[in-house]
Each structure stands twice: as structure tokens, then as C-alpha cells.
Figure (tube, rainbow, N blue to C red):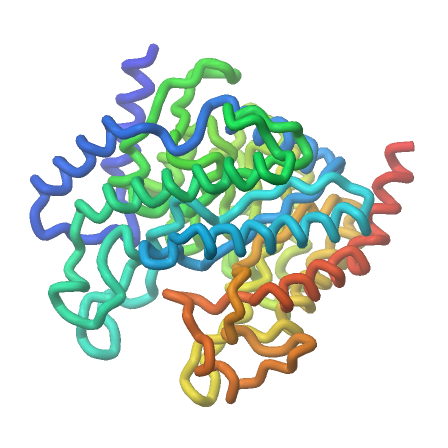
Amino acid sequence: MFDRLFDRLEAALAKPAAQQPIWGDPEQARDAVALLSRAEPIVTPAETARLRSRLAAVARGEAFLLQGGDCAETFAANTEAHVRANLWTLVDMAAVLARRTGLPVVKVARMAGQYAKPRSQAVDALGLPVYRGDMVNSIEPTLAARTPDPYRMLRAHADAARAMALVRSFGNGNGNGNGNGEGDGDNDLYVSHEALLLDYEQSLLRVDTSGPEPRLASGLGHFLWIGERTRQLDGAHIAFAELLSNPIGLKIGPGTSPETAAAYVRRLDPHREPGRLTLVSRMGHGQVRDVLPPIVEKVTASGHQVIWQCDPMHGNTYTSANGYKTRNLRHITDEIAGFFEVHRRLGTHPGGIHIEVTGDDVTECLGGAAGTTEADLPARYHTACDPRLNAEQSMELAFSVPEMAAADITDFEAALR
């Protein structure tokens, strides 16, 4: 039985895989994967099982999912100060959401593994290999630094383990656990990353027999998601995600048809487990009200209890007049408003938001009470990839979300009664 499971894994990894680095020495890549396979897991099975249970509550409309953190983690920024600042931002946002909605909030950080990034071009404006995240190469603009190095996966694992230790110690210091992977429920913190680099993702898999069929549990993160650029139905990433017992997220953009969305759901949630699959819409504020409804209707009609989550960041990215990739808080808020409007109209539960935020005092996104403008962007633009909301902008967003959600929550609680 287990041999067949690993045969399926081998077949999945043999499928076409988008956004993978080209290692200069395949033997080094195999060696790096072998070393990783002997490393300690980042997360425990008990933690992941607890998250599965809490996400089932989100899918039933009994909780709200808040997922956020850096666009791309970096080795240099993996400091206690930075990790704690990001965690405080997430916890503070969750406290506002819980207090103002009356729903428990499941907190999932983009942390302890978010070291690889998909890119739209293979080379940058200088003709160098594009930066694909610290797991693959360096952001420094030299050929040597940009050459993919498989041994950077080992550094990524080590840094992820250190970040996860900080997550646990942060939880202990705030009444969230006992240090043994056992928390008290509402206050637990979980970690997530995009399952992008398959050489890394295949390295720490263990057989999990606790579900409806034997599956593979990743020890690299509690929650893994498949991105917009790697969600090909005939590709390796979807085939890989099918085999996992971890909760799975899937980013869907405005090019996703209702039929394709339903096909993803059939593939990734074959046993109709509430909360097993999170569909993360990233439509852009100008399209969410038109594109999302038929997708929600099609998936809802299938009978699967997925989590509907809004990523209001990626569909609202643009280049400023002074050359910085940025986002406007007004557009971000409007996409979330549209997301709630769609679910209110259809009578479905808007389960959460997925945002790129930091506790650092950056100037990467426009708007907010401080009135950040394009002229302010160069002052503290520190992201390694996409722009993040700073702590002040994040809290503004947290206070506005319950206002947009209030009607939906009232209607849902009335339905329960």
C-alpha cells in the first residue's frame, strides 16, 4: 500500500513542473535533497492535525482565517526582532477581528519556509538570472550570486527551523502553548508557505494513515499553497498536492473558469473533507465582483465545503511613476469589500483573508492614515519581492474588515439558530 503511495509521488514529480530553477550540477541537487531528507521536521503532526480541525470550523462558517506575513522571507531578515514584529502584527490583527466579529480567528503566518518565489521572467533587466528567493539564489545583482545553488535549500531549512522555534516561544510568552506542540486552541499560531520548489518540498514527507486513505504529511509547514503560476491541472504541483494530508491552499486568478475551479476541487478534495482545501481568490478590485460569483456558485453546487479566502494583494499590484512596485490600501480594501459582497449575495461564508504584511516600519504600499505617497516609497522600501502593508496599514485593514463582514456573520449566525 505504502509502496503505491511513493510510486504516485514519483509519478507526480515526473510531470511538467513550472517555475523550477535549473541547477548547474544535478548531482549537487540530489545530494542536497538527500541531506534535507535526514533533517528534523519544522512542524509536528499534532500541530498540523490541530490546524486541520480548526480549518474545518472555518469551512463550516464558525471561524475566520487570517493568513499573512512577508512576501518573501530572507536569510538576512530572519532575526528575532523581525519575526516577532511580524507575529505581533498578525496577533494584533486577529484580536481586532475576533473582538469585532465574535468569531474565533485562525492565525497562519507566511513564515518558516517562504523562501522561494515564482517570477514572470527568467532574466531581469540587467540580463541576469532573475532572483527566485533566498532558497535558490541571492538578490545581489551579479552572475555568481544569481546562479541557482541547491545547497541554499539547507540554509532555508535551518532558518525555517529557527523561525519556527521563535513562533513557539512567542506563543509560550503569550499563553499560546506549552512548548511541546500542544496549544490551547484559539491562540495557536501556524506557519505556511508556497509549495513551489519541489526539490525542497519532497524532502521531508512521512506517511500519514490518520485520514480516509494513506497520504503523505509534509514536515516543512502546517499549511501549503499552490500559486497562480503553478496550478496547471496536468502539472507536477497539483499532482504533488493531491498526495498531501496537510491543508492545501490554491491561488485562483481572474483567468480561472468555474469549470476549472470545480476540477481543482475534485482533485484536491476527493473525500469532501471540510477545510481540506482553501480557494484563495486574487482577482483585483476591478474584477472580483464579476469573476468570483460563478466560481463560487459552481463549487458550492458540487457539495464540497472549501474555505473561501481573499488575497487582495496580488491582483492590485502596479508600478509607480517613480519605478516602484506598489499597492494602494484603498484598492486592497475594495477587493475585500467586493469579496464580502459576492458571498453576501450568494449566501456563502467569506472565510478569510491572505495578505502580505510586516511589523516593520516600511513604505512599500500607498495610502493609510499616514498618507504614504509615491514620493515616500524610496524612504523605506525593503521587500525582497512584492510590497507589504506596514503595521499601521495592517491594523487599519483589520478594523475595516469586520465592518464589511458584519452582515455576512449576522446572516450566518441567524441561519445556525
